[in-house]
Structure formats: C-alpha cells, structure tokens
Image 1: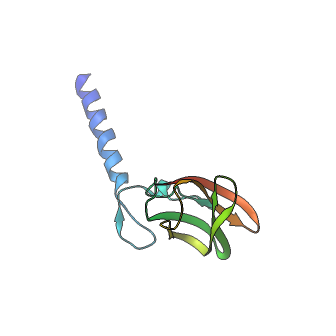
Image 2: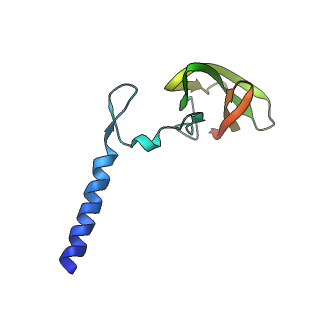
Image 3: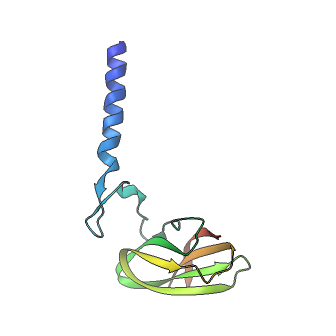
Amino acid sequence: MKKIVNISILIFLFSGLAYSIVPNPVNNSYSNFGYSDYPELFKISAPAPNPVVDYAEIWYNIPEDETAEIAIYNFTGVMVKSIPVSGGLNKIEIEAYDLQNGVYFVCLIYKGKNIDSKKMVKK
C-alpha cells in the first residue's frame, strides 16, 4: 500500500512538471507557466510586475479582426492613459514612470464598454 501511495505521489509531481514548461504561442520561446495562465477571450492579465515602478506588461486577448483599448484610471475614476490595441493574443508594455504613486485600474475597453479590469499599484 505504501508503494502505491509513493508511486501516486511521484506520478502527480511529474505530471505537474510536464505542464509547467510549455511553448509561448506568441513568440515561440519557453515560459514557466501553462496555457491556462494566458487571458481568456475579452480578458486582460494582471499587470506584471505589480507593484509597478517604471513599466508593466499586460497580456490581452481579443478577436483577431477587432480593436480595443487598454485604459488606465486613477483611484478617483479619471482616465490617465489610453492605449489602442489590435486583435489577438498579445502583450503591451505600459510606461508608468510618469504616474504618481497610488492605486490604478487597468481596463479593457471594447466598443465603448469596460469588459475587464485589474488593479495596479504604482510605487
């Protein structure tokens, strides 16, 4: 019985390793996370790094033939930046060196509606 438990644990551990290193579909390099870490359609990822110092990377996923924008709002709801994005699974770098320290909201705006949003902290 003990051997079966040990073997089960080993299989579980090794199966997790098989999924942890997968090719990145955007630039064919290898990444340390699985496909499930990319945003779903009409979603954005959390800014990385967070808290942000100078810049942050954000992944987004919108249909190939569509356009949208990624907007940054301060805590009071005022838009401080807007970046147009084209369709597909892609990432953008947001320059944050000109933002004051504080809490911001990164929003995916599609056809005039806020579809998804994430919190970003600027230090």
